[in-house]
Image (cartoon, rainbow, N blue to C red; front, side, top):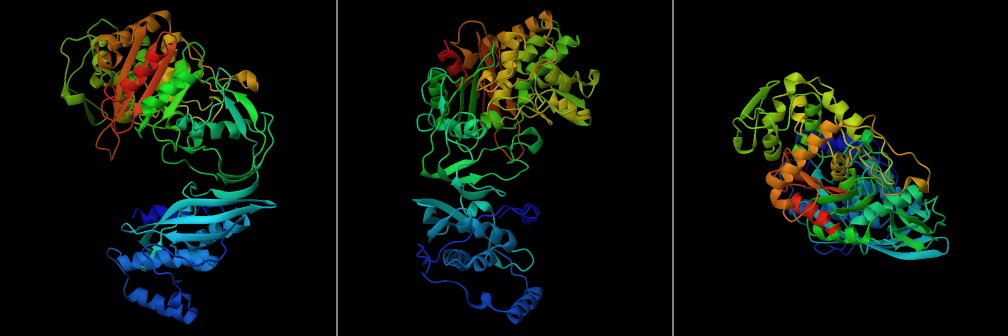
Length: 566
């Protein structure tokens, strides 16, 4: 059922309005076709009696099938009849529900709605919606599926609908609203680098990207708005994958239904159609997979794909990058003379720092090994053993000053999360050195890290050329010395040929370098698998959430793109 306390805290933010519906009879599968009101619609005396009874005995235990079906039916019947107060009263947050349901007809212009309930699955009840959206002389049918969950209300244990905006429409997040009217932004006809139109039908991964392009460039691309039903995003602290200050929660408004088409403007992107097709194929059917391919010398995004199409993890994800972060850490250790490619470097089974005992995968150790061997085999303790020699902000400064990360100032063309490398101390600082602790990245960030190594300097990634709108791209304040850069390339090249990346990179010819990573996540049986690499002027990175070792999961995805790049 989830945490009721957390739900209550969310509800105090007062989600934005959505609205009520015209009255029709519910005919739900698995339900009787009658409205549930009865005693719950009584006056003050009835309410007092119920309150007193609840005080004497709070209902508890698992919900019965009868409680689930009657609660869901009460809510759907009242909503369908246009009884907003009655429907809201069937939820565990009547105030928020009434505000949200009220605009269903007022703002979203939805009328003649019917709700057909499906067969409950435990406490969850699916239902189908059929309605009409009408604005001035334009009208279109609307149909979609949603679901509700019945829970015991805090305090008295009465069964109620667990209130969230997604009950009204699955595309809504708490804080969003539905609006029908002239589109906030004209449609955009996005073009690939060759001038051909990009569509979500051809490239399913690009749906969220295209929404973002319209959100940013709709008013600048020369089109005219149409009439549509759309999700208008509210203010949010993120979606659990990122944070508000990082921009990870910035999701574009979404069109649900067009009543009349606008005239699209055109916008050229940097995407390569052939490489985008390869990226789509590589993540197809892999819900937790995401990948980005860049041109290292310029920062142009050539391909971006997500196996789960509902969220652009490739650009907006905020995930611990695991050992791929060792590329950044290694550059810092090399600059500070705390490591040298071919000199001996400690890689013990364990290393204690800040009260934590760190270990390597399968508790391996390398006796009398070099830093190159530790990097290639991804020895955690080889990096953490240097923590006593570092200041708390050393890694943060290296990430910002050399790799352009964690500054929240990238201007890619759509919303992005630009990496997070916070200043930490003691054990958390040590964990950051191996891409854990508070470090957060996504494939766009880690592809940029490999691009920086390959090109020798940071080039902010971009999907739309800055010449289109005259925007300034982010810059890094310094570059690595030639000696450090050469050493870092040697480490990544050796790892691609002989280390943990060798199997995935087999057959990828030319000037190549790579680094694998696995990031432990609380509550997951398998770690997230990461891989970042370059070949010639191409740089790529990918993640497979809950995939296990990066060389086995994300590695083949990245390698396939590098091969396809020629």
